[in-house]
Length: 620
Image 1 (tube, rainbow, N blue to C red):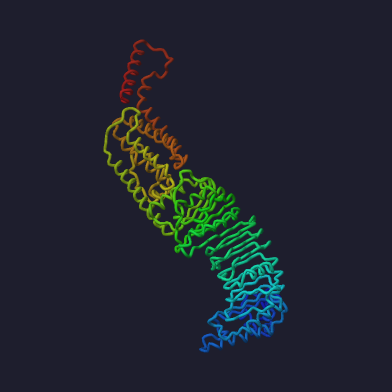
Image 2 (cartoon, rainbow, N blue to C red):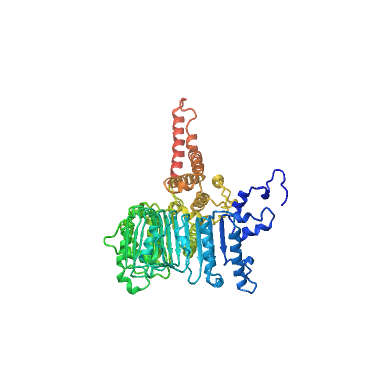
């Protein structure tokens, strides 16, 4: 190894305890390979407390691929014997042994028992055995091991329990592929584990069992998966501290669940192998009467069918999460009742995941949980038809607390395509509307300060559009406006934005639509008198501002826009007053308090009447 560099710690400088801890994260074969690094590393792997022997690993260390099937097995056997022989630590923390049947022809039962017994003698805490041997029997010392904390067995053997079985410290028990010998073996097994907390029974056989009984005071987690292969068997559970319960299996003869006051999470996926037995399985409803305090519940469609057949239907006052997953192989036969029947009994439900076909109908009286509690909904098996869309629409319309609705990616893609087509349709409508407005060539002049019909029509249309500003943002953002034609009257009318920058903000688009669609500049040019043009602009622009302030447009157009155009109204009004009424004001004497002759007074009034009449007649 290289010498230490000042300020840098080399791995060889670390103490043995640290190096051993690092090696404990490697498989035993990899840890053994480090023995060739140097003299110091030669025996370090023999001090590692974790031993992991896996014959199924495709590794040249066992000699696989050399043509001789027995060579790697012999190499593996010698390696395990050597490691256990040279292993210097008195205590083994973890011991794992794995080899499957196709590579176990030459691994004899005697060797396997010897290795397991060696680990037991060294006080192993975590034992994991995944082996396939014909007529294999576990060593007797296993059933009285006081140091075991975790026991995982994946062995196809008849699990006959001796009378003196005792696991005082066992907390985790995972059994797979074992065959239970009889009822007493099951009872003896669980009664011998006084501190048991976690149990998994997977793909085991209960053929010889009439009553599979688990009665334990401290058990917290229990999973029974594909093990109930005996329809005549009873499943009996009495576990006051059980918090997590999973049952994924076939229907058995009967169920007895007691003292589940601590239950939190339940996964009940009862399966029906034979449809002819459907009428004989209603006794399974007793399961649901004991899990009503759960906060999380997963059910298969058939489990939901069983639950809905309960009389009376149990309520779940504390349930927060409910899932009914989609299983393609599972036949659905809910009858008249569906998920909608259960929802009113789930007042605290917040997360809901279900296959869409379990929702039979949409109740007129919306369940309170959907109205006020449900935040997340995920729908599986969603198809793009009218029925599914109606269900999704019902949820969206009534889910007042809903934050997230998830549907399959294919449906989301279809929905996205529909939105794209809808966007194109709305864009086309807007374009047609704009074109229709531009084609309007009417030269009719509105007398006085009246509103032009085009102004009223356009603002009615735009105020309705503003009510859908969220989706309108996506539609109009890709619609670049062309630069409006500049008008000499008034010149400043279009000075608020530079449209050559192609802005994308919805407020800019709406502002542009207002100015272009209303066509105020074009209509104002029809007046021969410039003063009336200003009056027309002031009246119609004031109407536009008023409609903006009293509609959803006020949220899209900022105060700067409103203030700027209100200033324009004042300017137009001032211009109108000066042009239209200037002669009237000029006809009055400069100093009304100065004395004048009768003739001068008559001449003054005559000018005033004439100019006033001219100004007034222009308005009508």
